[in-house]
Amino acid sequence: MSSKENWNSWLNEQIESKGDTDWDESGSSPRLFTDIDSEYQAFDNGVGLISQSSRGRICLLGEDRIRFLNGQVTNQLESLPTGYGVTAGLVNSKGKLEADLNIYILKDEILIDFEPGLTEKVVQRLEKYIIADDVEIVDVSDDYGSMSLIGSQAKAALLSHPEIQSVPDTELGVLSIPTELESELVLIRRSRWGFEAYDLLAPWDELLKLAEHWTQPATQFNPTWIGQIAQEQRRIEAGWPRYGVDMNESNLAPETGLEKSGISYNKGCYIGQEVIARIRTYGQVAKSLRGFWLPEEITEAPEPGVELFNGARKVGYLTSVLKSPKYGRWIALGYARKECNQPGSKLKLGSADSDLDATIVSLPFEPVQGLGAV
Image 1 (cartoon, rainbow, N blue to C red):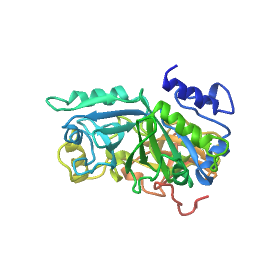
Image 2: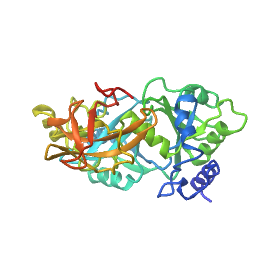
Image 3: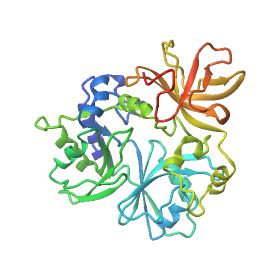
Image 4: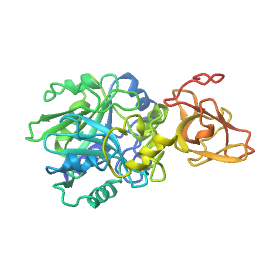
C-alpha cells in the first residue's frame, strides 16, 4: 500500500458514521466524519482538522520560474519575497478564468495550490507558454499531502507539536520546518471563511504522523475532523466563491470578486491582461458575484443554476445555495447584471412571474434594511 493510500485508509478510520455517502464521488475527500452539528461548531469552539489532500499541488523549478509565472497570472510575483504568497487567477487571452491559485514563493521553488481535478489543465496551460525559459513543472500531489488546522485554537494546537516552534505571523506567510524524517514541513497561514487557519504540506508518512499527534486521546485540544458538508456551509456563509461551483471559464476574472485580492493593476503584461485592464478603464463587468437572501417560504433548496429575473428579463442565476445555520434561512451565491445588482434589489426567483423574490446583499453577507441579519 502506498503512503497516500495509507493516509486515506487512516482517514477512513476517523469516520464514525460509516456509509456510502461519507466520501465524495471521487473517493478522495470525506463529506462527513461524525455529525454535521459538531463539525460546524468546531470552527467556533476549538480546532478543526481538514484534509486538503485532494487539492492540486505543483511546484515550479528553474532560474526563470518567477519571471515566467509572473507573465501568466493576474497578481504580482516579482516583488514578492521568499516566504510569502498571494492569491491569483490564471486567465486565458480573453480574460476568462481557468483556475484560481494560491501561489507561495519558497527558497528554491514556487508552490502552487488549487482546486481538485485541475492539475492536468493547469500544467498544460503553463507548459504551452514555456518556450526558452528555464522552468520545470513538477506535480507533487503523489508525494506530498496536505491538511489544515482551523479555528480559535488552531495556532495553539500547532505550537503544541514539538517540531513546530513558530507559525507565520502574516496571512499567506510560509515557514519551512525540518522534520525528524529528514524532510521539510511547509506551514502556511491560510485563513478561510473568516477563521484563522494554517495549511501543512508534508510527505504522506510525515503528514500521517502529524495528524496522529493531534488526534491521540491524550491531546488537550480534542480536535474535530471536518468534512466537506460543514466546509461548504461555512464557505457559503462567508461569501467565498469556489472554482467549479461559483466560477469557471465562462467568467471574466473581475466578475468573481477576484480583484479584491488576486488582481494587480500595476504589474506588467500577462496573458489576458489587456482585457482585464480594459474592463477597469471603461467600466464595470456586465455581471458580478453577489449574495442573496432567499424567501423564507421556500421549503427546499433551489437547484444551482436557477435563473433570476428583473421584470421579463433574465438577469442572473444562482450558483451555491444553503439553509444557513448562522442566519437561520436560505442564502445563496450567484450572479446578477450590473443594472440590478445593488444591495437591496429584489429579483424574481425561477421565472418572470414568480411570487418569490431573491434579495441582493453585499458579500460577506450583510443585513439589508427591512430584513435584518436574521
